[in-house]
Length: 236
Figure: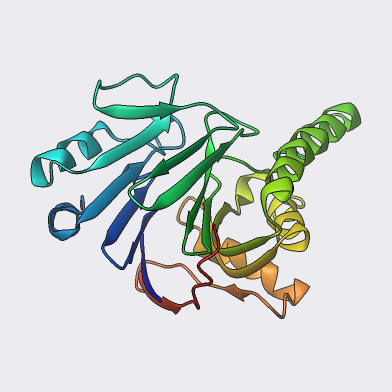
């Protein structure tokens, strides 16, 4: 099965496969109106309402395709046409399974399963330790919060085919530890760093860990489109 992944900006990605088009956390760039219009099954996912993850312009995509499905956290409440979800819920819709999990910041992260292929968008789920500014107790609490959610996801699956996850250099020391722990906790085949605030070289730090079984994609303004082939398993 072929997957076309496009980086839009920050944590915004879209992915196309079969007759699906999925847009995640779009807030800046060119709104993918044409892609939405031609898709048989278009979806728009919003992890939470922070200004760097949600732009109300995505609601206009339904004008291009009335079949567009919006999935958002319940506290966002922006439109009656949106399907609102809480953490730890499941939704079977249009041939895919959507599972939601909590975040260490606000909102949700999403696990989508289609013919056994698992796609994960973390939203703002990360190990937000902020070691330069935090007390030891606060760092420990950050780790507990992170692993509480990771362990819930692990009870669902330990394998993720395509993952979008933050690598936020603003934390300075050990800013990559959330991504590293995610990569060590799951068998991730394709990993897309995000939430890098245009400092795309921040993700280069992951190279030193030598995750041999994971393709870690390089994101930059000149390299936005990626093609991925994944063998479907037909397992739910």
